[in-house]
Length: 308
Image 1 (spheres, one colour):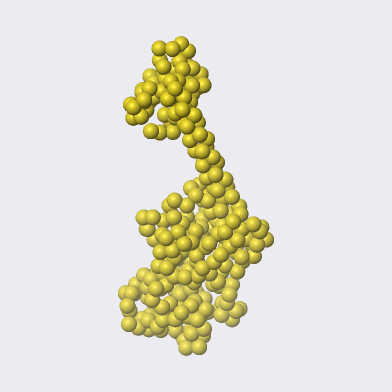
Image 2 (cartoon, rainbow, N blue to C red):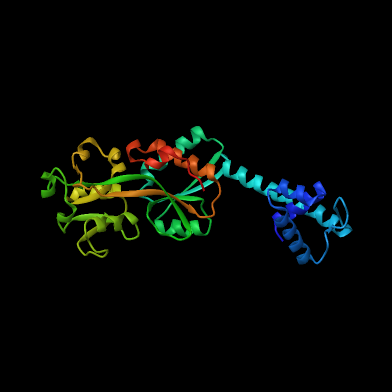
């Protein structure tokens, strides 16, 4: 039993003619007749008296058609509800974000949402990637800002922007004298990175060609802490491009770019495959685009809206 079959019996009841009903439904008369016959067989009842001209429903058929009209109405209401939900610009939006993105995006995002989308109730959770992906799977949050790719079968990744990595080097290190850094030739000692569990840790280790349990790596809890450790103790670390505005003018002189091709990380809006609030996704994407420097933004987002 399908909605299509119900549409066909309602059409025949309306037009009292199989050919005209088929034309109204945009199908051939044979298709319409076959589908109605299949429904009659499934219900074990004759819906129409085909010997009557014009065709009329049987007594049982009349009751079935009335119920079909109610079902079709409710189905239309459901479609309308989903459409409204897709386009809705109000309600709660629960967003997760990893710690290596939060300092650059969240403060301005809160202000932007409050200023331009006052009907949106933004709730934020800062946590590591593994925690946020689990919460997405359990539908405990709506979306998350994560470094990608994740290659998770149940999650949709929408790349928002790409930011380069930079080296932050103490003036006491030999690397400081270089205009650009070759990641393959970075020294083994005094590389300060984030503690286990941060996705940026793995990206840095891959960039520097280190194993995940490299014994000479010193670990810290945040990028800001890494910078301060380098300032106090020497050595070097790797920071994302959007951290640069948070540095003092003196600290900015300690930053060096990497040799071409410069390493980058992809930052995406990640959501469940079955998430339907399309307008909310675009609203959040547009808000983040207004925060991130234009040259970092995914070019596709500048041309096309996101379609779910």
